[in-house]
Image 1 (cartoon, one colour):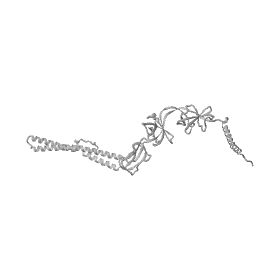
Image 2 (cartoon, one colour):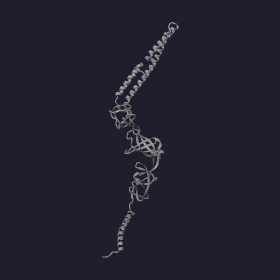
Image 3 (tube, helix red, strand yellow):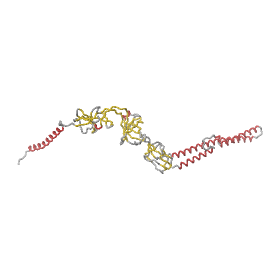
Image 4 (tube, helix red, strand yellow):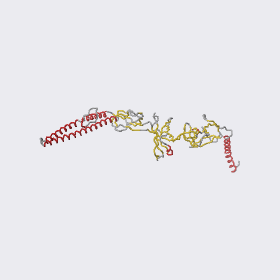
Length: 407
């Protein structure tokens, strides 16, 4: 048996390790050489020019649609509900009946007040169908007192004449003067009574008007056209005055509440058009800025803006979260490319342009999207040819250019 020397063993191990490594390196070099062989066919790609076009200057924000008006309605008088013909979602028009109380008690109060009014009119001698005013001198009580006063005046004058001729004692003259003063006092009292009855008549008239008003208030009507968003009571329930019965919202127009960042606040004005997009709805809705807060909210550094959005067909719902664009200026030039030409990875956006038959990566910053195209805010100046669908294409690769249809 042969003995192996230590240095021979180490040499054998080194050779065994080096041979696979060199074989692997040789294989990788050969593979890379095959990938970069000059005979490789260039890929055919479709390109489209980065076009300069005009778009209006807008402020893109999000907001909430709110009802123009929302009120919780209840009857002004207490009573038992006998009818509640509306429910959640019911569309109503201004003046439509929403609820009705039992009318029996209110009818009786009207009759009672009407009878009291007729009584007060009779005490003044007023006829049915006439007015409520009368000259106090024309009332029966004043006429009676006037007659007594006229008689007492005549007696006093006769007594004074007889007394002057020494034909009547002083006691009889004093009695005639006293009778005259009593008659004059009763006349004045009669006039006061007539005025008092006039006041009672006015009070009875007010009581009748109040009873009729309570009868009218027993019927709850819609103060404006809208829809019922909540019902708080049921038929047969006794409700107190002012207790909530239904909640009514005005659905046309809707109030769009927006918060505009402080950096864009100076561009927003009342009257500017607003474009509204609702998630899940393919239609675009229009509105107009109606109100702008005079101050910036210090809590979040935004400007409160409200726009009115027409909703005649009721397609929009209050409470919806929407996206909106406030058009702050007329059209301005921008660069647009097909949206499929932009590749985003790890927060970086880029496009591939073609120069001298090879692709070139260009970092860009995008803006608005419109009709399958996207705005390039930074990175392109317009006129460059961009690859429409780059896929896994990288910069520096050879390509054959094919224009997209219609370009």
